[in-house]
Image (cartoon, rainbow, N blue to C red; front, top):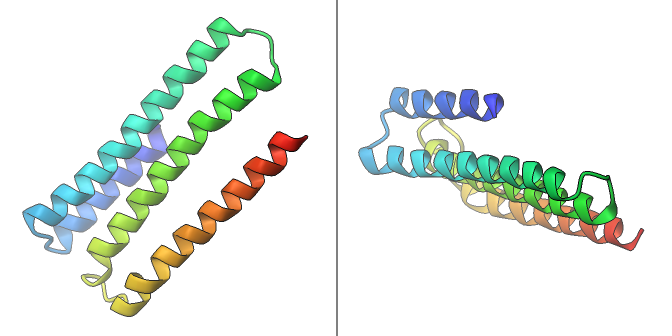
Length: 122
């Protein structure tokens, strides 16, 4: 959670420094809020899982993995939103941001899906 808070502050300060409009800062703030909400939900789910299922087991592990995956997806969405909004302002090539990020995000999702499927089969 501390890492997310530091990165959130850095994103907002960078946005203000880059001269983002109010709407662009709002997009960054919403992305930050999404990640923090997912992190809080993940923590609550982990605590609840530990309370209900104190012994380690495959079901408890799967529940915790799914909650952690939600945080990962929220963080990936936030990074993409930040790159789309900040990319042009900090000098990144527009085509690289517009085409490269969605492809990178899709590839990361496919890798995560494959890793999750492989884990379930064990």
